[in-house]
Image 1 (cartoon, one colour):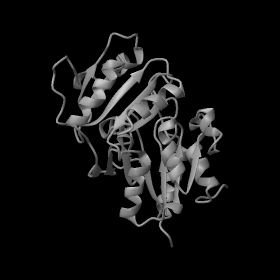
Image 2 (spheres, helix red, strand yellow):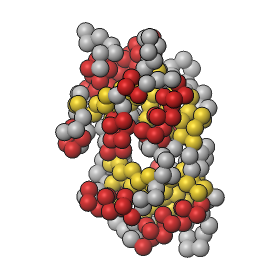
Image 3 (cartoon, rainbow, N blue to C red):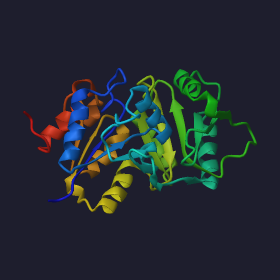
Length: 286
């Protein structure tokens, strides 16, 4: 039997709006594994943030682990085995490039955070230009114990997982495309804020980082044919993975632009992950 891989995004895909995971979706992941289908999460969260979210819902202790085999984290900058957390793949931005990225953002007065290399991604330097940016401040408050202000002349890290810029109130797609063009030597990924669901997060990684590239590395390691990959997502940072997969689905709460491109299943609050597994024919619809 050919090997298969099922990948789901985490926030607002597998995770419901009230920060839980439905019993049906958990059973679906268990059923896929029983059928010898490899399961994985592909999330924009760092490994630390992902594991913290699982602890918050009681799925990281004892035998009550989320039934997945791998976690692609930090939008593809790293891959770890699960449970256990052994990192098997990672990418970082060299220090010389961090300077180029931050100089660009400073010129445009965009607020940003520079996250340390894996495995210390939760630690970050930050720069605020005094903008009204409540989403930036909310994220800063959430991880304040790991945050250090980046002052003029302050050295950056030797390398970093990413530079995260936060644009309040969102940004139009033309503005995003301009940033991507200006920073074309890097992987620039747009995501909707998981905090206020409105602001735009612009993540700048090494040029070879994305969810799709990480998934491609994983399928080669596992011996899975790309056509035998199903993926499920909800936002723009999932788009490359959805397009790369043998079949990509979006949940019903995804932006209209994505729902026009990919097959749509029910929302994250109505077991969309299970819906994708059923639509793919990998588990029974009954």
